[in-house]
Image (cartoon, rainbow over the protein chains, first blue to last red):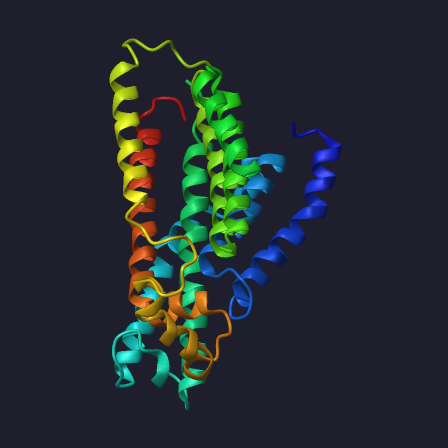
Length: 139
Length: 173
């Protein structure tokens, strides 16, 4: 499978588009469908494709397993931290209105950070599970 | 209607087949059909999730697991009468339950008259977000989404605990 030129060339062509589409789904979710969950899945799927075509060892060099395992709790911390930050600014937990000068900007910042947290946790979890399953040997 | 018939055909195929590789691929096809049904119902966010989780990620994970096991399902050791009975009774109860629901798409049901108009009217002035799905998920119901993210975190940690410990306990590697 590692020597299949057609698959490798096709994967090299399609991978950047998958990554850009994932980022588009993430950052354009204010106006189009999608959000952190969907974007995290698309980015994780790109990593899966890379691992299937080029082998797990090369993927683990680009996306190291310890980084992925840090991402799993990091996203939840970002999400919960936005809530704590809102409390620090004098509003209710996860009420983003006070994060910036006016309400709409505060909401935009809050939603942006929260979606980033969801993206980090979802993609990290999916890639970590994939590494755990794919890294095992047949007995 | 075409999509639902295809769903039924794929389901029968999954039930009747014994080759696990074919079943994994059929499950992926099932998820793509389900995503198409969601698009027909105008739930694009759900369709994206279904397509990427069901057809993409879970298919890859299933294939990875399949590599570790046999590819033929062993013959059933007990009669299928009790599971069939449970499935038929559950299906009948669910279909009976749909008669208590309001007709599809009716505008003045409790779902559409409680808080939904506030969200629809307030999304742009209050949050500046045109996509109401995003503003409800991330802002109005942010605490729910925090819970969902924590569920994913917990599930991931659980799977990692199980799989990583097994890998270290095995003699080779």
